[in-house]
Image (cartoon, rainbow, N blue to C red; front, side):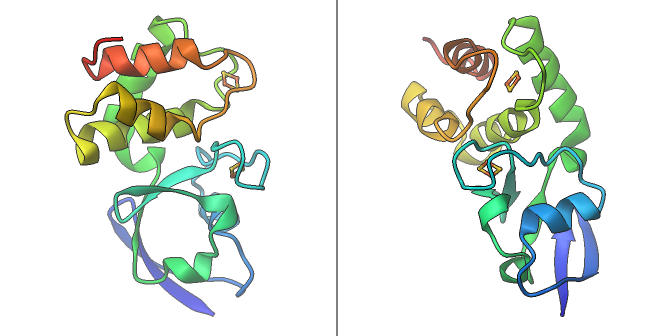
Length: 150
Ligand code: FES
Ligand code: FES
């Protein structure tokens, strides 16, 4: 089957199988920032924005994305670099595997939620599990980036 999506601002027609996950389709399309972790909706590293809201692409059928817009780190390169460098400078990044999903979540908090509270940050970041740097340093870094007191 063919689906049409707006991927990072560009209209794409993609040939997919009905049982393909959005995660696999995005990676095949070259969006390698979207990581494959647990594939059971538990770790959050596959997070992308669908119509500006975060979803777990490992548990979302690509067929359901037909007609929708998707944003990955590749589509927000400038802001992604700024957010990533800020988080790294705060010492909240080690292997970097979870960083793209953290960047997408931070981008969502800044641009869609707007003026997020610490509660908003905790709610959004609870889906982002990190295997090496823990959680508090990341939460603190994102809060500082967004100008939220912790
Ligand atoms: S790979 Fe999607 S939640 Fe872990
Ligand atoms: S920094 Fe390694 S998984 Fe998060």
